[in-house]
Structures are given as C-alpha cells and as structure tokens.
Amino acid sequence: MDTRTENDLRQRIVEIGKLMRQKNFVAAGDGNISARLDRDRLLVTPSGFSKGFLDPEQLIVVDLQGEKTAPQFGKWRDLKPSSEIRLHLECYRQRADVRAVIHAHPPHAIACTLAGVSLAKCVLPEVVYDLGTIPTAPYATPTSAEGPLAVRELIAKYDALMLDRHGSVTVGADLWEAYMRLERVEHSAQVTLAAQQALGKPVSALSDDAISKLAALRRDIFAQRNRDVCAECNACPASERHPSRQRVSASPDLARLEMLIESEVRRAMK
Image (tube, rainbow, N blue to C red; front, top):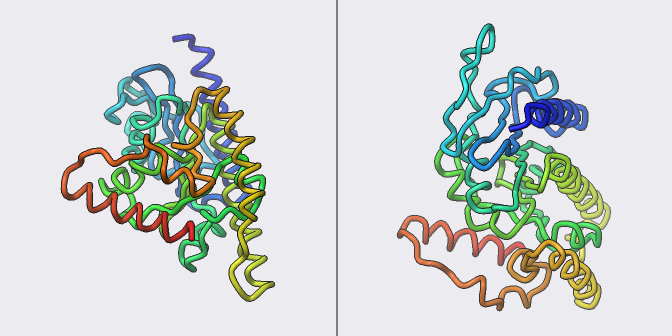
C-alpha cells in the first residue's frame, strides 16, 4: 500500500469532519466516517471524538470484522473504532463499489423522520437525478446489531438513506462523493420542510413524465458505471417489477425486518 495514499485519506477524512461540523451535520461526538484502504482494510474515525477536531493520527485502521489491524502508540494507543463500525461494515459488505461511508446527524433530515415527512417522494429533480430517492430505514438502537440489519436491504439499492430518529447514511466511490450526498440529503430535507410549512400540506411529487425523463438520464449514468438502474435507482414504480429485486431466502427474524423495511419504503413512496 502506498503510504502517501493512506496519508491523503487521513487528511481528507479530517477535512470532511470539519465540514460536517461547520455545516451542523453533527454535534458533540456524533457521526463517523470510513474509507477503504485496500481490499481488506478500512480507515475509520475513533469513538467519542468531535468530527470537527480530528487529528490524522487518531484515525484507526481496521479489518473487515472491525478489529484494529495496526497498533497505535503514544497518547492515541487506547483509541477505539467508531461505535457504529458495524453499520459501516454492512455497507461495504453489500456494495463492492462503495469505498467510503459517512454516518451523520443532519437535523432537518432527522426532523423529517420524526414528523413522518418522506424524503423518498420524487419532489426535487436534482435529488431524483443524483440519488433516485432517499428511503427511511426502521428504527434501530444506535450502535447495536440492529443497525446493520435495518440497512442491509436498502443500502444495496440506495446511495443515501435515513435511519429513523437517528441520522443519515451516505456512501460513495470516494469520500467526497459520500459527503456531497450527505449535503444533498440535508438540503432536500430543508426544502421539503419549508415548502410543506408554507403550503400547510404535503408537497406534491413530480409528474410521472418528469420522473421518467430523470430516470432515463440516470440509466445512462448507471450504464456507464455498470450498475442496474432499475435495481438501484427506484425512481419510478416500474422498478418494483424488476426481476433482480426478488426476495432471497433469509432467517425468520431477518425476513420480518425485511418486511418492515419494504412496508416503510412502499408507504413513503405513496
């Protein structure tokens, strides 16, 4: 591994952590950031630190089980990986194309989950074009094993999602893309809440024709990336009929959770 590449990643994570704090996407020690170093290792933020004041040397190298792979020395030797490391690991397991994951607490987007305001509706063209839709995963106890289960099905198909009452998860081919998607999520929430307050009722979705045109644009982009727009975009009802979205066998508990997830997504898309 080229050490300059690792040093660059460390610097970029620190920069993005500062942006997250400046933009009010996190408070106190909230949020976490990770990036792939190579096939078997990740670089992650430490537990309990403000993302706005990180030192590159505080970032921790872990394997794909979340265990530290290299010892730290001096004053940083006792640092632990983010308490949400399992959430990050699930994203990497489900998406070979993902090289960065950001979990944040954007206030307006969280407020939408509290108020039952869906970000999965196709309202803003730039969101449909860039993200498809932004679903909300069922509530899961933070830092617990419930988190990976709650996002497992959704993160395989979406680049951004909300965790009910908790925060956002955005992924990308690099750290910057994951961060830009976080900005998109919070901006969408701000606009949606402001419009709903002004109207006194839920915001109308784009017309079917407008959504179809935006979905067509996304197909071209996804084709260039060798991704399946119908399986991963979900910007139009036709995607629900795509054969690649058929259910796979699962344990009873996981199957129940998947049913809850599907129910939530279908409710949000109405």
